[in-house]
Length: 136
Image (cartoon, rainbow, N blue to C red; front, top):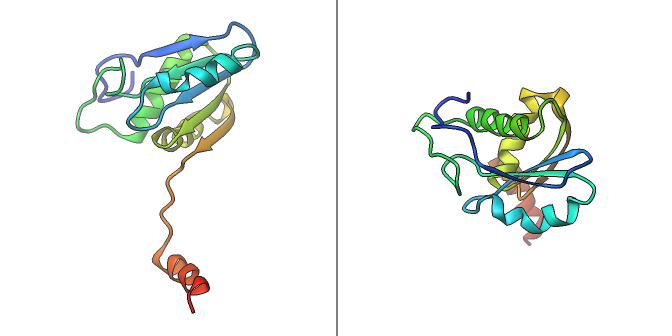
């Protein structure tokens, strides 16, 4: 079990056949933010929307929680919902930060990564060059 988390993560499922898509929500939402995507894709895919630790119905975590812990806990939810299956990982905001950790933990079980609203922290030098391009 993932470290620093008080129990398994909560998730919802929709769809009975096809490849697995796992949705990891943004802050401050929970798995319910994916309901319309799941309703649409569940015709062709088995959809799983996961509440990350401390959100929705998932248990809270200890102070030492890491991205690695969250990624491992998300894989445990996927393993519970679809044992042994590969998954398309869809993340938004915080979810888009967790999904790459999931990929690095299990590249053989990751069918694809779809990331939205990823954080971007450019270097000061890059930012200055871009600003210089737009100023007189």
